[in-house]
Structures are given as C-alpha cells and as structure tokens.
Length: 165
Image (cartoon, rainbow, N blue to C red; front, top):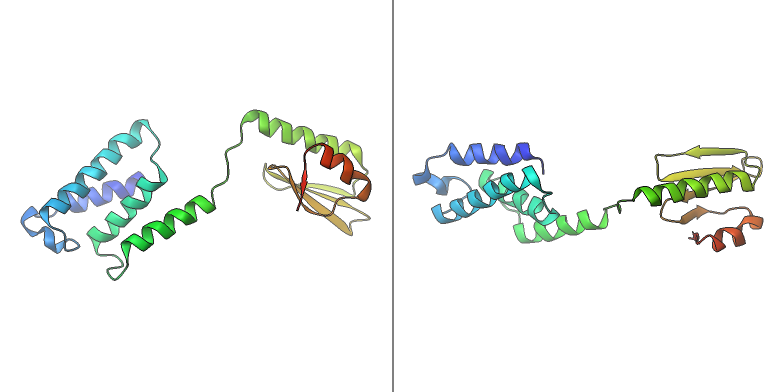
C-alpha cells in the first residue's frame, strides 16, 4: 500500500471529531487510537525501512474498516487470503552475480547451437527457436526450461544445473 493511502487515512481520521468515532467504521475511541498509532508508526518506519507485507495488508484492512469500504467483508479472511496471494506471487530478488550467471548461460547457449531466433522477454526469460522455427523453449532465470530444447543439448543443460519442467 502506498504512503499516499496512509496519509489519506490519517487525514480522514484526524479530520473527524473524536467524540463521533463510532461514525467511522463503528470504531470506539480506543480502537481509533490503536489504528492511528499503528498508521503513524508505519509512516515513521516507511521513511527509513521497508514496510513488511503483513503491515501493508493490515493497513489495508484498517483503511477499509475506517472508511467503511466493504462493510460486510470478513476482515480476518481477507487479511489471510491477501497475504497468501502476495507471498505466492513474489518473485525472488536476484543478486547481480545471479543475473550475470544467467546472462553467461544465455551466451553459452547462443554459441552452442545454430538457433533460428533468440528473443529476450524482460531480464529473466529468453526464448530459443530451432528446427526452422517449428520448435522453441524458454530459459528462465531460475534455471528452469519451459518447452523442449534440442535433444543434443539436454545432457549439457542438465550438467549446467538446468531443470526441465
């Protein structure tokens, strides 16, 4: 969640009359203060450190509670489903050495076979076409291959630690 949304939430909270906090998502003054403290701490933390995924999702839930967005939503279920979605879709960060190793592997493959076409998609995936363009496979930066490489390269790829899917 972006810092702008934290500020937006704080503005909504600070702009409200504390005597009428029940009008904001049905919160008590104590709940309001806890959420306000949590968000304030996130704002301070975000200036020097990275905010965790748990904190981001929790702040989304608080924001929905305060603004009465999705009032009939089970916030606990939303929190766990959203967090598992984020974790399942995270791509591992690659170090410069790992990126260089991947690029070296691509260069090695380009020299190893007479390809019809080599196509890059982003910095983490390269497509190799062979057999007059009728066959192809993708080399991924996590050392896996999607598709079928030429038979004469399979053993060499496995020796390099490439996993066939």
